[in-house]
Length: 356
Image (cartoon, rainbow, N blue to C red; front, side, top):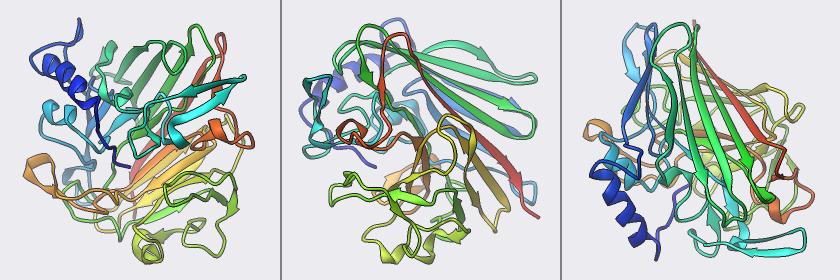
């Protein structure tokens, strides 16, 4: 889901220029690596972003399975959200406005009249503090933190902990604390996955299974209508594994839709499975969230990535576990409002393996 810059872009570039030259306040932007066995993951504290995920294929050959850039500077100019944490409210807010507790709030739009992924300068466009960093050992981990000041409304402290466990498992734990006012919070991890390798072409032949019997239909601006509809008989039905390309031509551009995940909200449950026959790689995703956005990188066009490779539409897929989009404007959707004294928590687990 690409974002559109506008009048705040110049302000953002001033901040970014200072960061590129070495620091943003007290925090320098850098690259950090976690390594366990033959799997390694690199991050940058710009946007608490996953930069690379390297692991072997069925032939034992190492490859990088996430899209991204060669340099941190390129992430600062990114318009795709490659690998970043997005928020304070992921996905879209209709009309960039909502009413909470009788008070109407006007936000800054950045996708037409709507707000996407927190607005012109969301959590993907700021420097996060590195609170903890353990590069290797039994469970290598890194913790990023950020203080979002009043204006959404309310000040919020957020953190994301990435931990690499034995058995090629990556755990992502996101937390947020409302400091002074009730506020909507909906964080998402926005990595673009291609299990064949980031430079292997499109993902139309990858098999996907999504454990969701329903989805939330959208209008022409990708804003939910407020309904929850069965996937049966539609191109959105991945209750059994299907290749991404098997029914994508039934959709205008590709997949960009929120699924209502089966199971109990707040409990860790299997959300999706992705398989790539050529490489043999398998990715299982578990989450405690009510929704997952399935996105097939429809907006990518001539994006120069790692090693000079150029990414195009459908070069990857995203599985962004989340609350339902635009929940602040749909009382029938599960609430995303976080009150002081009651923290927001969001857990994801990625398990990687090789199929027989």
